Length: 79
Image (cartoon, rainbow, N blue to C red; front, side, top):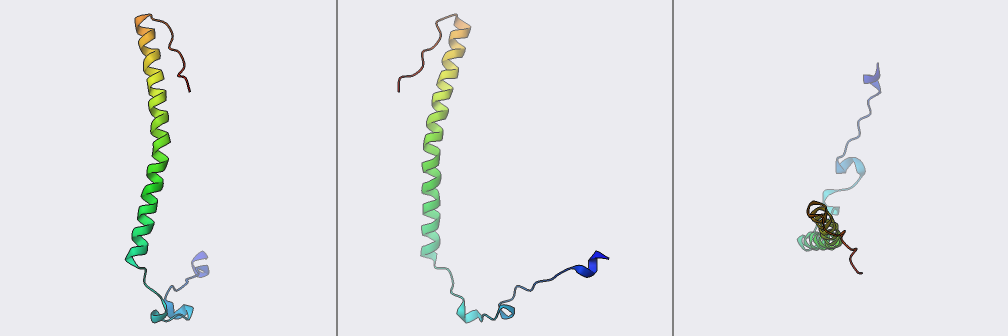
């Protein structure tokens, strides 16, 4: 019953009224620029995440060491 309701949409350029000569190819320089910007954004996002992970890890390590050795509780870092 539902098989008769299937809608098929062609994705050919001819069905859209666009000829292949009108479609401009992507330039390699543009693709490289997009890739470089993406990598810069990823690195920029990882810097504060790494800093936070090191900070939390050092606090956990100090707390665990003081717990196991019976020493004083670690003081919070000065910001």
